[in-house]
Image 1 (tube, rainbow, N blue to C red):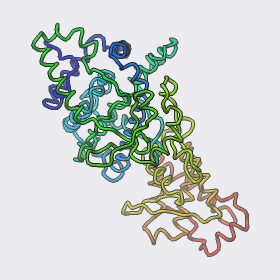
Image 2: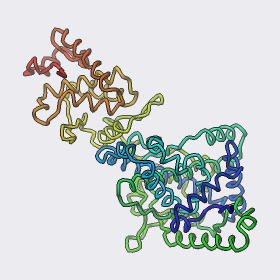
Image 3: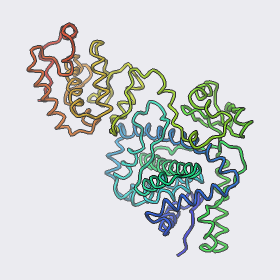
Image 4: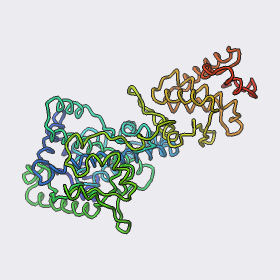
Length: 505
């Protein structure tokens, strides 16, 4: 049986099922078998960098750009999920689909993602465990877990550092490599591989999800390299060594033809893009021409473009100033640069999770909306699943927001229960049940979903807190016990006693 080495982009576009079979057969080669796969991929990639004219110098610039690109991709993916999980029911429908239906859309995701660029097609060798058709489609939870592992904890801004997809073989290789006193080029080679493998998986997930929901697949332009140099695209060292032997003279010639065809397609799609992390939009042929950083071009032939003066100024202050006209090293290529949004006054914003807490996706949606509208205290969904914004009285806002912060950053069950009880109490005393169709039962159901808590458990905790309130002489909700007497008297004026009780029956 013949083996196609590095199945090509035109092959994926013309015959995706056959292309995928060739890829999966290729990944059964001994050099990709655990635990040797990462080592083989790393050695091949490092060799390719050293052998390709101009590629070693471009790798430092390239890593920084690819990290930024991955951050933008993960922000886009999170934005899609904020919509598709919440309003389109993607999670339920995906789990309810048959393996054959899921496989149809996964195959589209694989072929489309690997067709974006040669480096992404080659990166499938770095994802031998994750990017198998049956693995992604036989059980629906695999795609869902991969999606949740790369989504942002707060999508109100583009993150400055991407989330990498963990897998035992690559995790172990990374630890081993970091403990072996690696050279700077070895460090940057490994980091580039981790970026490309995560980027490819993210694209596969994005295209799979959109295909399943009947949405248009995004047209992703191929970004021009940051360093202006003549670089050849060629077969990987691993494939080059055995291509003619495996496919024969004619077979090798046909594959070279397909590779050259793919190169021409990608060159036609290559575009400049705005270097500002908060923008990244591509330059269009009939639009405004982007401006180039003169110092980078004159000193290093590095092409850094901006779509506007405002983007250039924003990027200069927080990012570009440190590297302008300078040769990058590993530290500069991987430097964690705070996003401009994070450097502004963060008053009223919910912070990132702490102590390893992973926000459930419904909570990511809530945090994103709150951070995009800092004047709002919380969003509650009514019986028509429409968001109703809540604003607390000034006297209790500090207490409420401090509790909200702890709940959203730690997932502490006791804090969440007190927070939920108070929201139920607020719905009652503000008359929101009749005005907007809110109810304590609905609040508990929503908070249980957002914090991934069993509804019955959260309801019982709220009942206990209501008992504490019932025993208090002034029927003060537990969350407000620290409020001084005068503030409580002013707040409770006009509140009917019966409205303060949170009941579910």
